[in-house]
Length: 154
Image (cartoon, rainbow, N blue to C red):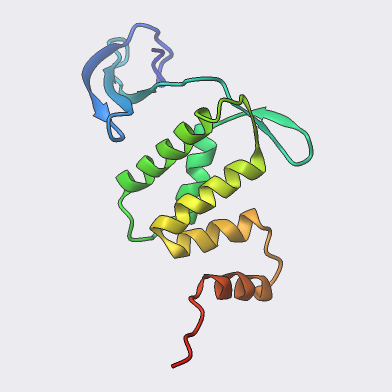
């Protein structure tokens, strides 16, 4: 593993342990050349996924890009970071288990919204506002009103 500080390719693993609910390995590494310490994560990748955008453009699936967008939606929410990591890993496993290598971006967005709706409504609305391209307050109002349970006539 190349050192991110000096570029040395001869780094040493100092500690390894399971991470992300045992779906990844966290390794603490040390660079003997510059003394730098850094952490890497190893995950099983079942297949290379390609995201097919609505425009037809294709790009390699990027787990970090997915994680960034979810973390932005969940910013300052009372949800443990481990819970968010578990959700991200679950989404990736679900995408990999479809058996397809080409995944429509629309499918990814729907899966993320489904997962967010189960753990935090505010994060769900935040993500939806970007995913569904809300243009004004009326779009928020309509979306949030669909979340509320229907009033019961007593």
